[in-house]
Every structure is written in structure tokens, then in C-alpha cells.
Image 1 (cartoon, rainbow, N blue to C red):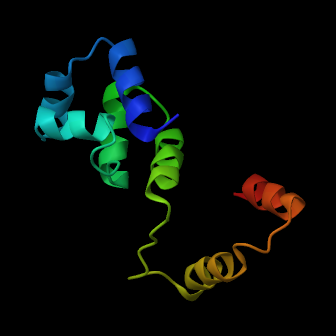
Image 2 (image 1 turned 135 degrees about the vertical axis):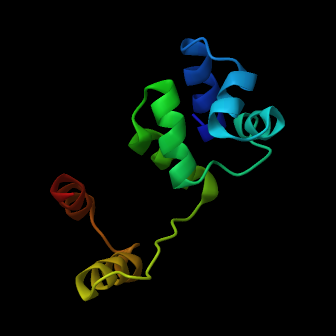
Image 3 (image 1 turned 90 degrees about the horizontal axis):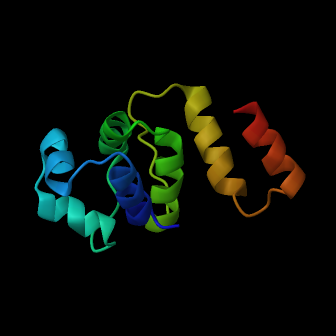
Length: 110
């Protein structure tokens, strides 16, 4: 399922109109509609957290769908310590080299 489809599904399950969701997010209903229809990129992480509060869902699951839709992950590096920077670098450097077992272990550890 695509990010926008999931947002629309959750919104309808909660009986929230497009206008109400847009109002609670401080954006236009055209913007929300465009995201739901895949005409615009998924919401930012901050906006995803707002949406999850309104719709009562897990923000992580929406974030995973947004990452898949975008095709990339962006990590802010300002203000991070050396360990965070190293972790991001190792993940990026070895991204295509992890075995299924290693991925399961990493996911389990996080």
C-alpha cells in the first residue's frame, strides 16, 4: 500500500473529512488530497507525527510507507555525536551488503 492510500484509509476509518484533517494539520485540503492521491510527496516526519496523533495510528508505520514512496531516507547530521554519525555512515556504506540475518539482527536491536 502506498503512503497516501494509507492516510486516506485511516482518515476514512476515523470518520475524519479531508477538510477537518487539513485544518488540524494547518494545511489546505488540496494539499492533503494531493498527498493522498500520490500527486505530492509524502508528509515530512514532523507532519507524519501530527497525522498519527489525529488519526490514532503508529507514526513509524506511516514513516516506513513514506520512505518507500520517496525512495530514500534523509538523516539530519547537524548536532549529532560521533557515534550517530558513524552509525549513519556504516548503514549507508554497507546498505546493499547486509545479509537477511544481519538485517533481522539490526532491526531487532533497534
